Image 1 (cartoon, helix red, strand yellow):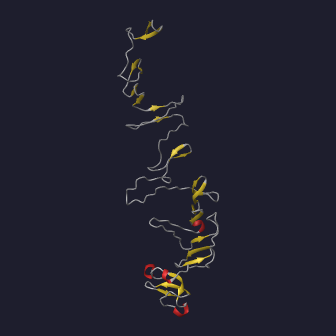
Image 2 (cartoon, rainbow, N blue to C red):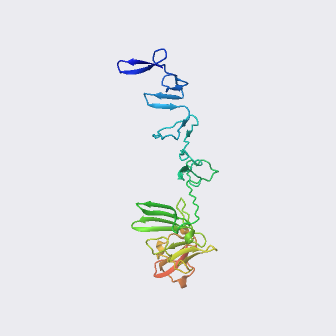
Image 3 (cartoon, one colour):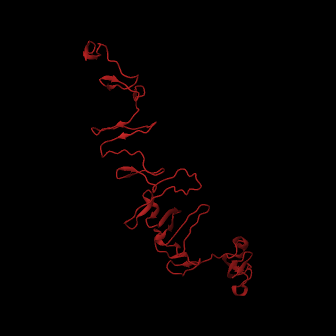
Length: 302
């Protein structure tokens, strides 16, 4: 290898065997490397000084002899590429699990499962989709464990317990509105669109309590359905209870045909008593308190 003295820098500059400067290998912008004792270049390793962009056409192998730290901003591969980290403790997980699964840390590795997933494109009428599913293996957990607890400023607004009970809390003009659903309190509920529904299965309760702080308090009055399809008023433990019809006048009753046959009401101004006019159409303008029902055409005393 030959050298010559550079009077401008005071250094010895390396020159080629013929005494001239070393000739770069490869084409313009290709990174130089030792290629069998000579400078070499390859289209798979290119550096653009204008954009400060390094292009690598093959794999990058990070040996365990050192550390590598950078900020990865954009990866647009045209083919499958491999980042190999020989160190047994090093793992790079780009994505895992089936399509649509939410990624999470599982023992230090990125993972995904169909039990914790979101489907973004529901476009098959033959498929029953699930937008979000959470499946917990509960072999032993403390009482009060929740599958879901949504909070605002640290205060729970929606809770779904691990035993199926649900507590929905919302503030309405200073009052608390509670609905407790699920097998824990022998309740079952469905809220549907188009008006909404609250459904209790046989033996379940749609109950009320005087508690202002908890939806799990004892029920003091409720509606319940027995196996024969009969709705009963109950105090929460027995089949006894009271049903109050708000009194109104005959003139204020909605048309019997509109409310339908079987509708009950209570009027305060019947011209006749229950005993003297039972089974007859009610007439207003009097002073008698009587129960009435609709036969689909008229309001009947009885």
